Length: 134
Image (cartoon, rainbow, N blue to C red; front, side):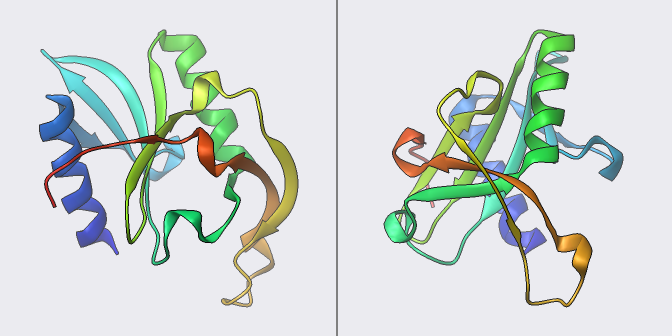
């Protein structure tokens, strides 16, 4: 889904008046968002093939959340998670998250034990809607 992800990021950049730069995999997050040559935020992007209200919570790797919080604390900028569901786009500030639960989960469809890990379960109603041109 890299093409769909890249298209979503382009739409976000128009809405947020920034440019995005893809990060190397070692950073655990997908992009930096840049304005006037300065990194203003880190960004994790997800494309989901179901409606926003399909689940009560959004599941994300705890390692990604920890990386996001570490980067924000160090750099003094936001770390955001942007999600495109079938019916809506939304985001949440990972560096400010307080109301969440921990679980253990992940993908089970690939037969890889590395896909199961500690996860953060974010109440779906905590996501703010993004209005972009699709």
